Length: 310
Image (cartoon, rainbow, N blue to C red):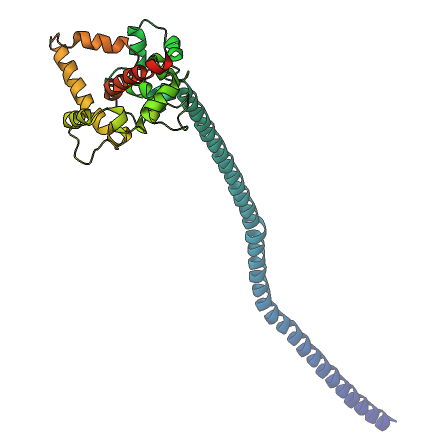
């Protein structure tokens, strides 16, 4: 019995030893596995956590920069620029409106001034006429003792003729019918004498009618034409068939110079021209360049028609 028990005990001890060894191995393996599992995650968790923290910081930083500061900054900048542009646009529009308003006011003022003084400053009636005598229609009317409107009406001159119209221009514009009547003749008698055609009417300016008149009718005989040419320095190209309008400017320029010299002598105390000057002014306004020939022609025309008229 004791031998058997002894064997059993040894077997049990061996079994128990094997089991213990197995348990110890298993425990060792488990401990090793546990240690491995515990160590590996610790090692792996160190790197990812740092990386994750860094990525998280970068994500947060990007998010803060991109979403909040930058977005708000962009929105604020755009809004500010938009407001500034809108304000600038309004200011520019206001400035333009003010400038346009000022221009309109200035133009209106200029138009108003020209409406009142335009014809005085830029007298259209003086255009193309040499101021031979230096006198204005206002001065002639004053010397004649007439109101200006009476003066214009008497000589059939335009009612809007400015007072600074020169005498030469006014005399040119007297209607042919009025001029003939002033000289005691009819337009028909003048037309026959001067050789005018039907284009010359009662309302044709006498200056225009005379411009179409031959010197043979306007000045007279060949002897008169020769004297006329010598007096005004006209060449041989001027004949009896030459129209008065072709030589009028030359004659007027010379008579202007002569008249100015005469006025200079008068101002210096010469009395030689005083009576002549007063006589010229108190007569109908006439261009000095055409006054003598025209008056002489008018007298001749009136005389030529006296006998037939009787």
